[in-house]
Image 1 (tube, rainbow, N blue to C red):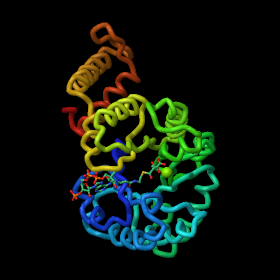
Image 2: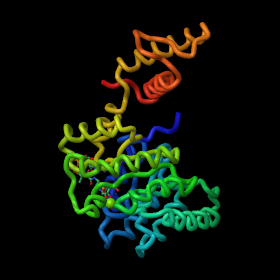
Image 3: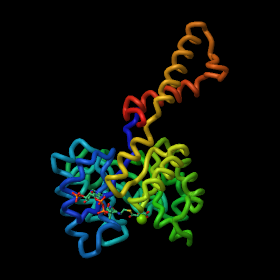
Image 4: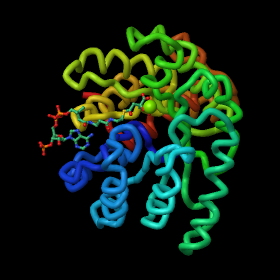
Length: 291
Ligand SMILES: CC(C)(COP(=O)(O)OP(=O)(O)OC[C@H]1O[C@@H](n2cnc3c(N)ncnc32)[C@H](O)[C@@H]1OP(=O)(O)O)[C@@H](O)C(=O)NCCC(=O)NCCSC(=O)C[C@@](O)(CC(=O)O)C(=O)O
Ligand SMILES: [Mg+2]
């Protein structure tokens, strides 16, 4: 099974208190932000704080992601130079509009990796898609580099670009479908948007249920309280696990009898159903059963 990436917790890079404790919350990935959660006058401080946090022993057994500033800004390249040298696992490139944005990032990454003695290609990349142009180019972006581990939809900049606002999800309907299909076509992960009202658990869970059913790997998060809610909603239910076990047993019996398709309580069990059942069992083994 691929690495579980259900939760990616954003953490404002200039917030020293959060940097010193965030590892205790155990998201699947922690995302230090140097971009929009950091004020202009704090960009250099945030970069230095994140440079040190990345090397702290407490962050060695958790996947680390850094959202750098766009390379078109005065900060982007300095961010990249610092965090690659500090050993970051994945760079999140905000406002990715074209495959050329990824090619530019790759060029810099390769040089920095050589200069600091990191294995070339070892730094992963995640593209954040935050505009209509990015959504239109999602397939080309998702296929642009073997470094890409996933693409993420970023709703707040996207709705601005689309001249609308966050509401019940209607405004993200096409973008979610496009980003998800692009990720699957490229064989990489797909991440849904942040839910900004941390006190609205019911709204958060409604959105999580939607994106789980659509097939997203997970979601960008902004608050530790959202982690357990998300992990629990993504865990299979006991009923699903029991059914998956019965499917595997029925398939094994069919195989012993030389049958490619068998019936379980009147429902067809064939290869895709068996694959799904195996995935349910793998997920239960990795993340437990829903409470
Ligand atoms: C929302 C709020 C202010 C609420 O504060 P509150 O104080 O009410 O939170 P509480 O729950 O009371 O905190 C309880 C304890 O948890 C600690 N704690 C809280 N949050 C923590 C955290 N994130 N990491 C570690 N620790 C944390 C806290 O320090 C406290 O610790 P302690 O005092 O020790 O008990 C806070 O969470 C927060 O700042 N979130 C991060 C916001 C952020 O990063 N935004 C940028 C990314 S989006 C964007 O840019 C848009 C985008 O680009 C997105 C895209 O690209 O996808 C697009 O276009 O859509
Ligand atoms: Mg944004």
